[in-house]
Length: 334
Image (cartoon, rainbow, N blue to C red; front, side, top):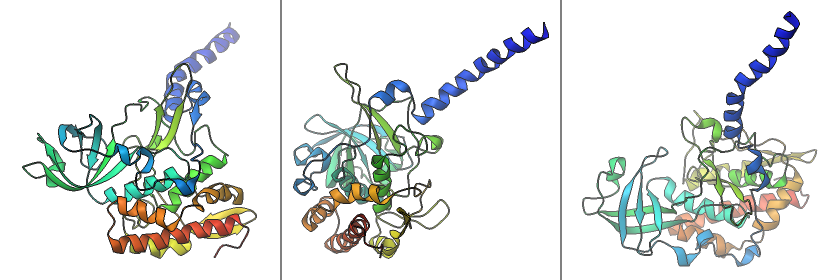
């Protein structure tokens, strides 16, 4: 009889764990139905022909004034509002140090073939009917006027119950995931929180673009605002949109290559540096290496960079791409 009790007890304990396991699966983004249609990267086509001023949304889908206030957006740590433009498109608007950085970084990432949410820099404008703005009120005056804003298209395809982490996703061990990590490091995007950080804000996401019976789940980083400055781990000095800091760290972007594995200077919210190979670098360098200086400058100018910032960032970005090309070509890291 005691033997029978033991046999029954094991399934019961396992059943008690099932809800916890299910939540962990959702947290890790490993739902089998999602994995079947999981996508991380798509061939961007002729990179040298891409419009980096327009970015993934293209110049034709840029925000069109007048803008009408819809509501305050409380997600994340930055102050944001939701508006509708003259074309009927809805946008999330934010201000501060992330504005220019996010516009530039998302364009470079898109040029490498990764999914990004269409994002634009708006130098100035008016939000009609603005009210109850909370923390955003310091960027919008009583008449609704604002300056230097990031407009990101309101994305309706986010999966609410599923996300992914750098450690748990369908792309572990692939060059595509390694390539995304390289883009994080190239843009110095230290703010790479994932599903493990739900209590403080997540910057990874899965978008459901399934239609007509075809499953398509796009894995991406939804916020590139913590970039284009100095990288660093929590508690260590780091910043956003700081060309002096970005340039200062550029010589340590690629540190060396040892036994076919690349060592990097980057540090961020999570450790993503390990195990990236020369072949992984080649996957990215083969695309970024086709960007022209004019394209990089166009991305910066479209993101609100000053002439001095365009010159400074262009040189540092080109230097980092050249480091990747040297590694991909078999030359020793500088």
